[in-house]
Every structure is written in structure tokens, then in C-alpha cells.
Image (tube, each protein chain N blue to C red):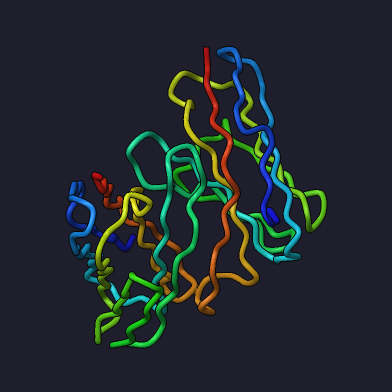
Length: 115
Length: 110
């Protein structure tokens, strides 16, 4: 049974048109992460939530925002997608934050195409 | 920022062969994880190693954490076509950050 679910699996959006990607989890984990993965590259952390506390990576563009209305759901909003934002977006969860030997569980990803 | 390096970047072998891939850093990690990612899918956790020198086996896969907790290796015995994928290591840096290596892309040919 899927524990981290991302919707949609594939998303096509127009250049500059806001888009929202969603992630839900059934693990009741405290931490939720959003990663961006471009072709042939490792996942790059954009931000994470520890419960309701939001933590942005220093080099994450302002164009990317996130919301976590409750424990189970987390959203990635891209306010004005550019061609360079086309990528696989991965959501992950972990029971606790790093430093406590915790493990991350990933969803299947949403592949975003910008046209 | 702590960096993880993985080698080789690409590996293509015949079914039945053995292989080892490496994950190295100059930094010490509290734990290190290995993931396999297939095209169009999210990474799937294979194992977490925590103790320096630790060896874990998962069927034909053997994972080792270096004594100094700076490096790790993944050895696959008698590779199968189903082992094809991107193998990612990720390090947990005592709560400061969680970093991924660039991955080793493995192709196992029939």
C-alpha cells in the first residue's frame, strides 16, 4: 500500500501559469520534504516541514512555496513556472528530523513539464 | 555543505556478474542510506547503516559502512536485470542536513 502519495503523476503547465503539486502521507510522520530532481541528477532539497515549522533551503528560489495544512498533506506551489523548473518533484516523509537516524520514504514523484 | 561522491557514475554489466559501487565523503555522517530509483519513480529505501564498520545484507546486496562513517559501499552478487536503476546514497549529518550523492546508474544486460 502506498504510504506517500503524490498527485498528479504527470503535470503539464504553461510558462508563467501557477501550478500546485500535492503530497499526502499515511505514516503520520512529523517531517515532510520536497525535492526537485532534474534529469540524471540527484534529488535537491527545496524545503521541509517539521510538523508546522517551515524550513527553506537557502538556495530555493522564491518562486517555490509550500503549505502544510495538516499532518497528512503538503503542497508545493510554483508561482510562475519557467522552462528551467521542468523536473521530477519528489515528496518524502520521515518520522523525525535528521540526526536521529531516521529514514526518508519517498512518493512516486510528479513529473512537471512546462510548455 | 557536505558533499557525497559516488563512483562509478555509470556501470553496465552482464547478468550474473558481481559489482561494487562506492559512496565517499570527507565528512562524518550519523547514518547513511542507500536508495534505488527506477525511471519515472521515486527513490525506494534499501537500507540504513548507522554504526562504523557495520555490514548489512539484503539478499544479494551487501552494504558496508566505513569504520570512520565517511564512506559506504554496495556490493551486488550475481546481478539480475531487475537490479537496473539509479543507486543513490544519502547521508544524515547529525541534524544539520540530509544530502544525496549524484548516484550510480547501473544497467544489467541480459
